[in-house]
Structure formats: C-alpha cells, structure tokens
Image 1 (cartoon, rainbow, N blue to C red):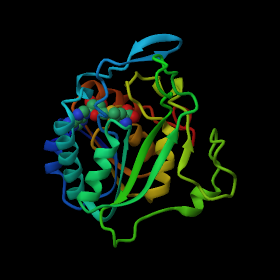
Image 2 (image 1 turned 90 degrees about the horizontal axis):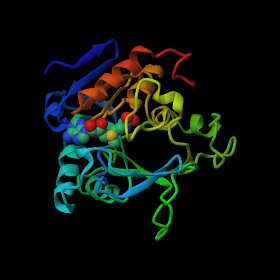
Image 3 (image 1 turned 180 degrees about the vertical axis):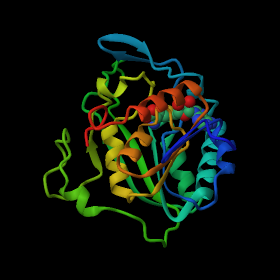
Image 4 (image 1 turned 90 degrees about the vertical axis):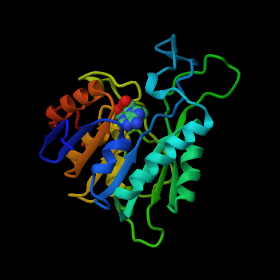
Length: 266
Ligand SMILES: C[S@@+](CC[C@H](N)C(=O)[O-])C[C@H]1O[C@@H](n2cnc3c(N)ncnc32)[C@H](O)[C@@H]1O
C-alpha cells in the first residue's frame, strides 16, 4: 500500500484505519496513541469565546448507536493489537461517550490496563445548559499488550522533569494520574485547525513516559498529527492514518515546518 506522505521518519496513510492496518507488519509497533472519534457530535451545544457553538466536530464523529459504536471500537483495537510488539503499549483517549467501551474492550481482549489518566483542562469551556457539572477532563487509558511483558516507563523523568503549567505536579514528587494541561495554544494552530486537536504538551508527556528514541509510534486516527509532531521532535519514528485528506495536508504542513523556533517548546 503506498503512503500519502513519506519523509525520513514520518509516514502518513490516507484511508480507513481498519483497511490500512492490515498492511502494516504484525508486531512492528512500539506504542500506539489512539484518539478515536468519541462519537459525541449529536447536536449538543457548547461555548467558545463567549459564544454558543455546536459541539459537532464532523460526520466522522456522529454516533451510530451504542452497539455499532462498540463494534467500531472493537475492530480498531483488535487491529492495533495485531501490529503492536508483545512488550508494546497503547494509549486511548476519550470521554464517557467512548472510554468505558474502550476500557472494557481492552480488558476483554487481554490487555493489562496500567493507568487511567485524568487529563484536567483548567481552561475548559463553560457548561451552557447549567443542568449538570462542567466537563473539564478527558480520560487516557494506558495498557500493555502482554500482561507479563516488561513495558517502558521512564519513572525518573516523569518525577524529576519540569512540567510547565501543571499546578498539580509537585517538583521531585512522583507524577500522579491527574495531569493539568491546557487545551492547544493558538501557536499550535498556525497551519490550520483540527476540531479535536490535542495539545503538544499532552503528547510530549505520553511519548517521553512510554517510548525510547528510535521507537515506532502509530496513531490510527492522526488528525493534525500532534502525535507525529512530538514523535519526530523526540527522534522517534511515526506512522499516522486518517480518512480525511485535509487533515493529512495539515499534518504535512506541521511536519515540514518542524523547527525548534516554530511549534517546538521542548
Ligand atoms: C479525534 S480526531 C484526532 C485528532 C488528533 N489527535 C489531533 O491532535 O489532531 C479523530 C480523527 O480520526 C479520523 N477518523 C475517523 N474515523 C476514521 C477511521 N475509520 N480511520 C481513520 N481515521 C478516521 C477523523 O478524520 C479525525 O481526524
């Protein structure tokens, strides 16, 4: 299968990840970061810069009902399981719309869950309906493929590094499972916007914690390739997949402008 883009350590494929993943070598990937459609675009409202806006992200994020959504998550997690090395790990992000299904599937498919991380967003949008609490976090599940394998975790780096903007992390104390990280800065959207773009700081923490230099990282729902930007900056190899060409073109712009003075904050 020919890639949409290939340069040095970065490869992008255009298509449904269920099709593309069949073409990757089994047990070739060190770490998967998956930010799948949460399937929450069902005509709700939110607030952006003081204005009421729709929560809809795109047709790709519409729910098909609990059963079909569950089946979709099962298919892509199984496909990632095949390409992961035995000692490999997977990260999955989500909200209550998707994360319980993904967590149950990880357990049912034989993964061992290592952590559920609460990504706390101090600048989360206010709740317009005022009929429930304001959603201000997402969950990240971290699991290993083989419960008996020795996975990578850079404990000392997590403990001793400086994590700007995180008031919860105390210097030289163990890193806990609640991470305070703001939503992406304006400077991270210089080349265009993705409706569900993840912050660079979140991916920096994940990749530093769970991979080594030279490792191969896969993102099956790459979007604007936040995962790829950090993977390349940290000298890892990256494979990203997305159905949408516009998002891949945005990814390419981000890759081609990768330079310490641009997006990098490392
Ligand atoms: C939540 S977004 C990922 C955003 C990304 N983490 C970022 O920082 O930009 C999910 C992405 O998955 C893509 N997508 C949806 N269904 C897909 C599928 N079956 N295969 C591959 N990509 C898909 C969408 O086009 C969207 O860009």
